[in-house]
Length: 306
Image (cartoon, rainbow, N blue to C red; front, top):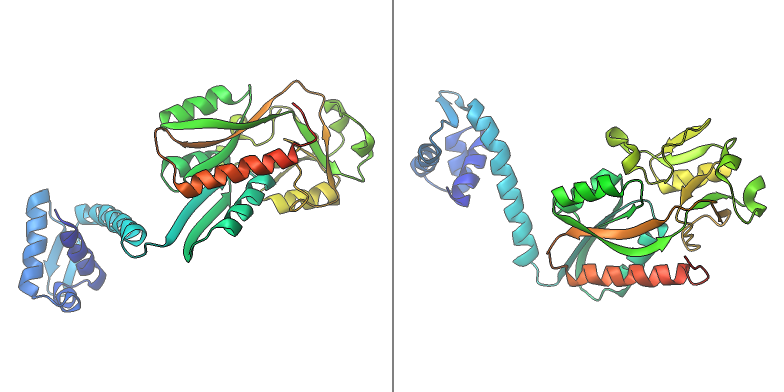
């Protein structure tokens, strides 16, 4: 089986006709028919029904289309990356909803000296981050681990051949509006939050306590609001006097100026780090991003000690 055979087969499916596909490919109809026949003989299955109105896929052919398209798409990605452009720089990051991760990404993009690049950063659900890295859709993923979730997260990472590398340890803080009655406190006890709406990032179908971005996720709340993005969460912190529990890292360049963080009275330790495929050599761009992460965290933690 060759890539050319797969391309020929997909062209036949596209045109629903061997004769029209042959014209589009600028080859003889007999050559195209022979190529499809050889492919079927090699696989020992029938891919196409031939009839007077053209062709139709067999059940095996319908399944084969999915795999053939995936192979062709992957080849196109390789071709675009390594053959079509020697200057294009690629980098993809998946992360939990951390403003410092975005700030580091901004710094990275501003420092890149390349005629072309294609970068992406995605704030998304915890399990999606793990799957993105495992499936090579992202080179790095940024998540946190603590005593509560580490057994489940580490087991999942091991199953997917991923490793977690710690960037920083921090104590939990409460993100609230500067106008919240609790804003003047030097430390907040968990019971003092009972009457305020708790805001947490929606984990979708995989809404397990172990995948929550907020610690102490097993606590019950009188008022609970699930959100899907950081901007909405910040707006609700101010608009409905809500709160969320996170690292306490506030990036004044990106976060709302009316939001502050107050230490939570808790012995919990949050370990924030990045995940990547074990034994995979990171690209230069990924290593540059890690350096920007460390620099950004150093600035944010300059007056903190944990």
